[in-house]
Length: 446
Picture 1 (cartoon, rainbow, N blue to C red):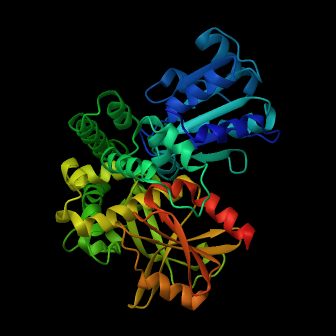
Picture 2 (tube, rainbow, N blue to C red):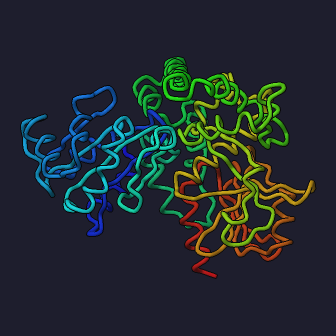
Picture 3 (cartoon, helix red, strand yellow):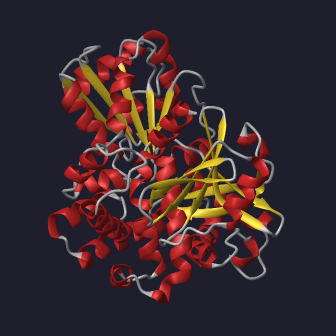
């Protein structure tokens, strides 16, 4: 499966200012696979080290941080083959299991800059806070990896021709049914399968939804097991309560996350740490409120008023108990939840493009699904599950703030119009991966 993050890894490899790289992301999103694939494609040699449960490997870092000694033992002692700067890719996998290996990255950066070191860690954020790790601030680069987004899924599922074809059309030109029908069907499949690599691989091999369901169920069980294995014992029940409440809270008309809805009698002060653990683990994303849309949006965000979404739509569907048949039939029986489900999909698509979104509210009269920054502009986004694109909140936002560009994302075909002074693009849900291309062209034109 082709992963877009490979381009970022190649850019890191070729950078003259390269530092050791930390590749983070939710467990089982494909970090190890892409690191090894990167090494096989772009290096003469790969030196792979897995830290979890490997005390012998970790002991190399216990004595001191003499990088020449460490490299000698990693190469000549452990694998009986030297590590050659510029030719060997070093992979430290599950590095959070060895805090001193994390600290050593400072010395690798200062003394062996010519080395290529990639470190993967699923629960790195959790471990740093839990274990008080001496983190090498300013001496590492970070890259976050997500489950497969829709364009990656599309290409993996035999849709390369559609991926290539839509890019040959004018950005404001409606796509013919040859594309819309097939892309809509592929999006349905993505809603069911999601982007976890194991589930996607099973789908590609079998095109069997029951087999995919089994994989997703196993992944969800593994995540729940992680609570007991890695979280403070007092937080384990709270993690389960919050984890189970997310689909229910998303299904509410006003899907602001409310701690009192997690467990009767529990308040935010008792549950905040558990929610932070889930966020640090990459299992959930927080979407924070911005009432005053000014740059930078991060300064305007209200950390106390937020929504919570899951990291993968396929896992959200499975955890919510929505059958794949319900999605295929587009049943009215899950109409209300489908709106929140679509929001979760749009959020993960934006994040996978490096876009940090927020949402906007104006008192109790209007709520806009997403806002994000692009080249010193604030771009509003309204997301709808169906073709209907009436969006009163979007209209109110545009009337009040007159942004130069905005998006109505739905199942409606490509098109554009004006909402007040705002150039508004109708963008199909299956083309969100082209959103930055639209932004770039439109703002350049204006």
